[in-house]
Image 1 (cartoon, one colour):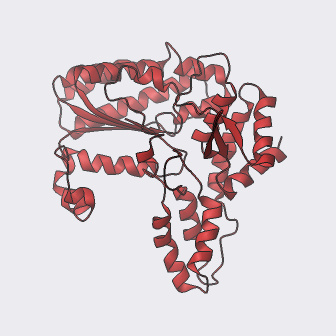
Image 2 (cartoon, rainbow, N blue to C red):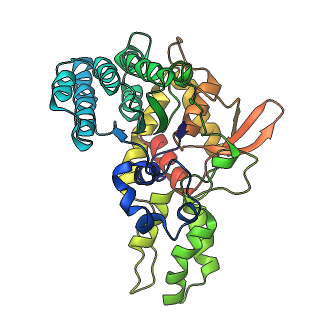
Image 3 (tube, helix red, strand yellow):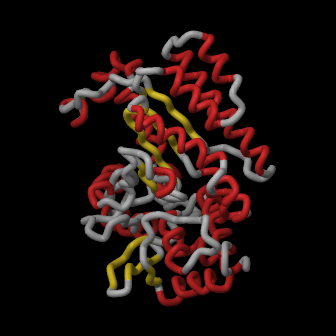
Length: 371
């Protein structure tokens, strides 16, 4: 299963929870971790029954070209596979066998073969992190890595085979964009994209009820009403909706936590600035997306957003970068997946998107001033 959300929403924390819930190695900790929660009081039969393979593809330098990126991904896959074998006390001969393989796909394929009938659960965090960084800088390199014959595509083809054999029994993947999702998941019998499903609108991020619990202590300690705090937090950090039938929008978790952490309780003053510069730097990289394909058409979309307040397009459930160029709906959908815009309403010609909050509006205005 796949869940795509913008950066800083809490995807990694969700995967950590799944790891502790399903990992057989944490069986004795189940009551401590989950006993007071709904999932602890209503456990599923599969809790703490799997050896869990966890992979995280963030932190890969994408400035050094194809071979260096391939080497770093290969090293990551190698470390995760060897760590799994050590953690669950598989023979050292298996570790040497995998270490001898020279590509991510070959290592994964040999790993599955060596496990035999042993089923395992695979969690992948930031599956597209390095690919999205490349996309913003070099579309041709992106297509080489992610396209047909690329090492990323080959790696996921091995996972397809593992699901068909039944060895890979459960898979949960998080990322930001559904790059090549159709081609990567066509062989998965559990390859479901949950990202735009109504029931998963609030899977990560904060709901307003959760935000109230974080803001109430500030209202209690300061001559500020909860209504005032909530109204301002809503304007700056809320506004994300991933399905138009969903009853509520959600807050970017890191943005809201920045506000709470940096609120001056002594003077009862808001943080200055209201946006985290670390997040601002991250979204600054996203603005490079406006140079993909037809730069003039892309910046016309930005101008439309800032002046008219919304843009219209057909929302894409997958993004195929094997084709020659992105059309308007591709580009607008990409912005939505990256958190620059969000769903507002349906129209006869598709969906209407808008800038979700004041943080993103400020970042968009910065990008226009730097053109």
